[in-house]
Length: 222
Image (cartoon, rainbow, N blue to C red; front, top):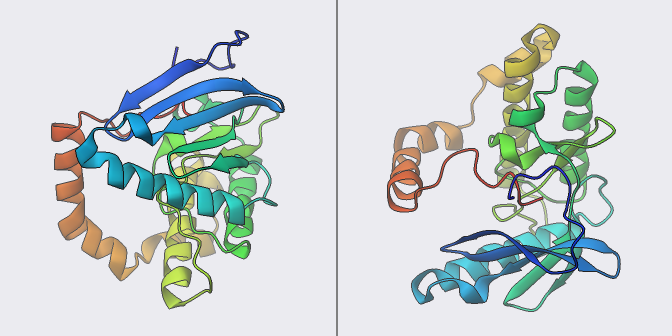
C-alpha cells in the first residue's frame, strides 16, 4: 500500500507509484530500504523531463549529504535514481501539534540552505514527514536547486522555503507564531506573487486536469 507507515518485510521490490515520470519502487538494499525511481518506464514524451527532475534530485541530495533527516543518495546512473527510504508519517496525516516540531523544521530548512540547497516545494504537506521520534523530515527533491554558488535568487528562494514552512506552522500552531515569523509570512516575494497570478493556474490545469494529480499525492514515496 503506497501510504503504509512502515516498509514491507518482503525482499521483492514493491511499486509505490507509476506515472508519467516513471515508476517508483521500494526495494531492500545492503544498507536497508531504498527507493528506486526508474525514469526509463516514463512515456517517451515525458522521459526527458523525468530524467531532468531526477537529475535535480540527485544533485540536491548529494549536496545535502551531511544534512540530517533527508534521504541519502545511493546512486544515479542517468536513468534510475536510488536513495534511502525515510521512515515517517506525512504531515497531513500526523498533524503535528508540538511547537518543537516546527522550530526543528525551520532549523532543518536553514541547514539545507547552509548546504547550498533550496527545496522549492515545501508548500506541499506530503513533502514533510513526522519521523518516529517526532522530528521533522523532508522528501521529494525533484524541484530542489543546488547551484554552484549562492546568488540573490538563491536567497530569495530560500526565504520562500522558510515562508512556506511557516505557513504550516500557522495552520497547525498559529498561536506559536512569533512577531518576526508573522512579518515574514506577510512579505511574499515577487516570484510568489507572479506564480499566484500566472503560473499556478497553468500548473493546476496540467497536474489536476491532464495528469490527475492531487496536492497530497506522493506521501508514500518516502
